[in-house]
Amino acid sequence: MAVPRISILVPTYNGASSYNGAQYLGPLCESLLAQTFTDFEVVVMDDGSSQPELTRDAMAPFLKDPRFRLRMAAENRGLHRTRCALYQEIRGEYWCAPDSDDLLHPEFLARRVEVMEEDPHAAFIHGKVCLIDPEGNPLDSEQFANNNLNIPPILYGRRAVETFLQHNYVIHSSAFGRSSILRQVLPFYTGSWRFGEDWPLWILLAATGYHIRYDDRTLTSYRILQNSLSRSIDTAARRRLYVATIPFCTLSLATSYSAVAGELSRKWRSVHYALWLKRALGVLGHKNATLRNETFSLVKTAFYGPRGGGGGFWWEVIRYSLPILYLSLFKRTPKGRDSFAVSGLAAIGDPLFFSPRPHEG
Image 1 (tube, rainbow, N blue to C red):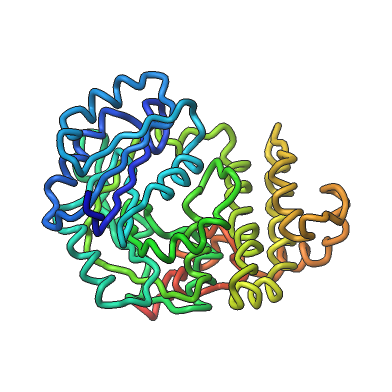
Image 2 (cartoon, rainbow, N blue to C red):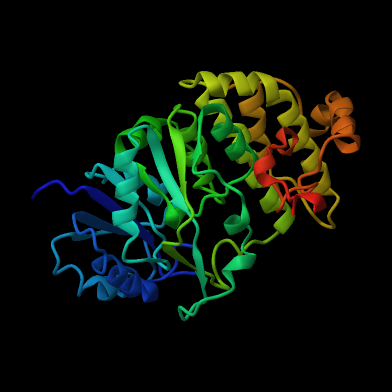
């Protein structure tokens, strides 16, 4: 079989999650068949569904097309590990990985290939999305914060890394990347992230030194589901704290191959650690809230290294009490003048995330 230009990777599961549901696989696959660029392969991976027959039935009409393949995992591993397994399946020069409940517009692949071929130094490209409800009806996308950021067409080097240290503003289904660069960072795309599993990937890719492209054309429909993983959380504050560990831990990993990551880590690591401790204190301020040991261990290992160091949580809070107090009194809060709440290192303060002042219009 000839090697395709593009590998399209689709994780799916029959339960309530963001990679949710055989009932949406059909519409997604129909949107792939409608692409004007046709040199692609599709690999769908069922993540150990409790009702695997739903996935098989949904895929049966499309498996008649040799471009489509179905993989069935023996057990449920979670979205992060499923995506990692799918990335090992890539054969094409380019890759994209839409969620099984989203849709790609007919020009998606053609437009993405066009931009990437014009720019051999781009790691990946992403863009705006159209919000749709569970039935596929359009929602008000103008109010979607990610669509309203003033993202430049190209983000280079250090600034690309800094912006991703502050927030995950990429909608995964809109992303389209170069496979050779993805393979460079896969050894560092480790762990088993329970939330925000795509955020480490954007940081790692930006840290390679290749730049990031943005397309303001809307070429993806992003389905909003009431039962998606992004909404099914037991404690919102604890989930936000867990997600805030991602840029800190990922930057530590990226220092292994990136001079920019090393420079930013030396500059911001103590501030980032103190900011995380401050947020952890905020979580503990919620009634009946607890701090998961695994979350603290992730951050502590990233800060002190694999050999360990420091003390327990309260000892670290006492040790960094002055930086925590300084951040509380003088530094921008995660919201500040941001156009939406920043999850990562708000202290950097990149204007990409600022709401315009009144006189700026």
